[in-house]
Image: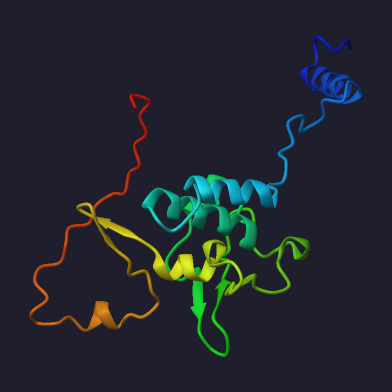
Length: 179
């Protein structure tokens, strides 16, 4: 039986040829982000707490770096309560990983021994995950409401003079090359 008639054998041979040429499963391995690259991104405003786009990017980057979230899907699957702010004895964030399709708890090698934590960074507040999490942003008609917090007092105990609740809006960042 020749390889042209059997697709499985042809696929194995092709993989073997590519591997011999140095083009295995991952020919384009990503490089680690250096500290100088982080500083450059913070200075340029791509990462930071000054604007909504920079804050979202910073949270995305810190989720990846501190909690090991891989790819877009895991970030989009985050739910409120997966990251908890612990204030005693020292402020820090704890990532409580839920069971997923690929991490269903049956494989002991694919589970974490402890929940990942991110501590308050007193030395460099621009890269502090706890500060970015506390600041959090909800864009409501162009105004910034910095009220991502774990306290539920504001949502359960409504003030009589508070007025109507604002409508839920989708956050969308639009980039254009017309500038």
